[in-house]
Image (cartoon, rainbow, N blue to C red; front, side, top):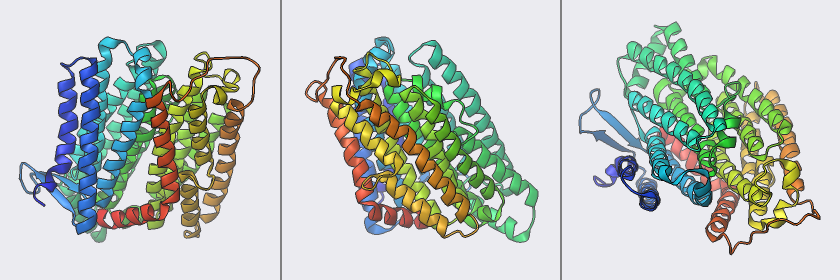
Length: 496
């Protein structure tokens, strides 16, 4: 027990030190160190999840062994350990799926820098999952932001630099609001540890003191993290950031980075503000409205796109809207649906980006739909991967996206006040999803007389294996949804 308590801390530190060591290594050594560190963290997370599942205990690690309120805590329950394991899996597949393209996208002298940024990104995501301290969370939010900017602009062309600047401006606005919210919360409660803050907030709310400062604090925290996670209308940086960065960067940014901020928001709702206090505020209704707007506007933007990667990027805006719509419903079941969709979207969106790059490779490097005609025949595994991801996003049974939409529909029915708008927008969004994803699938499987480059699975064995793993993961989430839902529910109960 005592040794396993160190695993969350080991996971964060292994990733951090891997990045530091990679700064003095060559390209190949940095690549292997990155791969080994992700596998080690994956193993530690799997052991931690198995242990917590078997014992039902919550692991709390005190940094420096100083008790509250002076110490800094790392906390791991079922939800945290499972999310860490899942994030490592997606990071590993995203890196292996785009590693071959990295040679052509990034100059060799900067490859070790790329792996440094990936290591720091993973460390920050793990810290956001495990930390029980708001100030530590803010520090790693900034590390996450800097790493994301580096991953976007490392290609060093005009579009990526512009995208990184736009991302940095929007992200720093969100960070500023988040920091202001943390400062106000510290001023009201006198604590930075999440459990201590929750006790103080509960007392303040019950006594009816500081109602306006508490409401403003909740608004600042929510708006800050909503901006950083690309909730509509704070999504304007998404298309360029995802569309012009490296393949692995696009997969990581779309599937993991925004989810890390949402996980932090969920932690704040449950373990800082308190679910009942947050639900009693009117902020949750505002989140619900913006979530619905994102579901529609993101899909409409995707329909108008003629670039496959930018289309996938705008689709992420709609999917983020789904998650915030679930949070806005304000019930335990809706929160389970939102967390399940975090898993589903992370597994599917990275798969779509990895599949799309294979299709563009056999289309003279073009990402426009006209040149993608028939590409599913020229690169069969990429075509199958993209088709499976598209079916999942639309919500076809067997795949993870179907379960997400089913859970959201069930959660909406349980909330009679918000049921009608949630179900209507859910139906409209599903139709819009079908329009732009099925249009693309039909395009890549439309026969053409023009002969082009054909790639087989034997020519790209690692890429093909990555695609097969993505497909298997998506089907697994869809077919084994009930145990996953049970795990999320148990994790939320332990989380709170």
